[in-house]
Image (cartoon, rainbow, N blue to C red; front, side, top):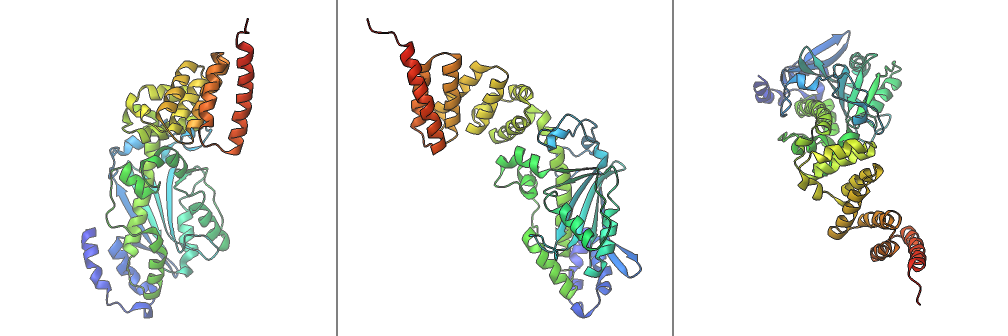
Length: 404
């Protein structure tokens, strides 16, 4: 059905252009993208609904796999959060397309997509703004999705999408309805998955996390100009591709959100050192040291030994905080012998502390400090190490046997 719509694109090539009012071509665009024209008075916007019985491009296809009551926990999404869980039935996944990427009072949202669980399906509802005069009606339809118990889920939405929506509501002197909570999946996704690809965009995560390739997808930076083209000549142009792009963003947002608790609760899913590094980082930032150690104990051992210097340091500090000093010291020693880079400094420093205070061996600690001084250090680090070196020299002299 949709393929036939796309094949009929040539029907639009000889339309009269900007000499025709927007509503003349709106039914044709609606037919092309499978939309309904919502009319109230002179206002007209497009509404597109897509229902999914199963999630596409995911191992977690069954909708019920996304609806566990204890699945999504506060600390998964909020650094320093608690064990309280969210009800996914109240999730509203939200993404926008705008006339610019840098913000400003003149920037307008012309397409917004909402995703939510509906009657054992995942529904995506999108609204398209055909022209500026319809903006208040467009915003009103969009805001009807925000209820008192709505948990808004976005990807960088706290910094961009939601402030843009509230700004447009303010400019149009309309009521702002705040959701009950707002989860920005970008932050936990960065914490967990940024080491898997060159960046942490949804499209990159689709490729590295979900093994999905969108194929020919319109780049985000082109979207504003293609909407302006539509306003100028009223040809559908790239509008169908923009709607597809937005729909895939909403679906991918729901899937990435689901994979956050999936990876945090299933050590057997770890299949690479970079992924383990992200999980160690997430547990460590949330001070869940005991859970971190238990998690790593269930992961294939080779992935830990292949992890970065930073990940090894975080894991060792978790061990230290729980009193597992011998195991932590082994990591500091082995890492400093096998790895290079500025972060090795911290491993050697922790090892020197252990040797001085736990093993009561200032001479060994002094040797470690000498190794630290062979590294490239900033002035603050040098000052700290020189101070430690002076103290250790003094301690060594006091412990050395006096000559007869």
